[in-house]
Image (cartoon, rainbow, N blue to C red):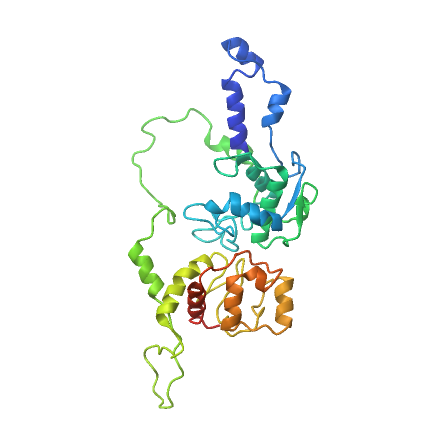
Length: 352
């Protein structure tokens, strides 16, 4: 990306006759002044060269993100429509359709700071102050569970943040090791092969709209845990809906849960992501999912005996940050009581 942006900048200088040689040859423009070049030369390198002076934390960044970024990237960086996700994607880089975020893919934090400062927000690029840039990047890091919400990101603390995929890239040495092998001699320009065959096809191209009817069908397929069989020795062939369970409400909850699924997984094969898996959450003790790094506030609530009953879940889902102050969950909450009840009913369908 940086090479691309540099290329645009240098091309603009050449086309405008900014160098003395081109200006004299073409009779266009003049040589750019040092201060004019400096105004455009925003490069921020992994070693910290070019870092703007400023600071911000995720608490400030959350509000800025909601104002400047959420329309495309969602309230908690989960992505909206075809706009990219900025959080999650852990352990997906070997999948057919990897989710590439700052937390899962990017190797250098300097690239994120550079890109936000240079190109965001969409349609008003370069309008953010240095402090706002750091605060927004801090919120993105927080959404990826890479920093605490009170960590102050700045030009001085940037190197304290380690991105998980920092060692996942190799130096591009193809110019020295490969170019000479296949670029020797005159290139073939016509009739280079007897025939051309398609040997591979893209397996994942994430541009196909989902069919509305299939989405509705998927939402309505809610698995209900069967009740304990009667003492007859006969095995029940079909799931039995418990009297306290509302299948229609659970089906509605499966749709509402789409607001949660960028951070939480349920069902067979569910894994911890930005948030823990939620299988068996209804009626379970808080903070009980293994290998998930809960916030200090949630751990304290768990030590105090918090059980996720329906009433407790409803209070948390309405306003997470008010219910457990200091929670890492950045979602602002569900506005509708019916939506809250529906999500809880939906979660009942998933056993631990």
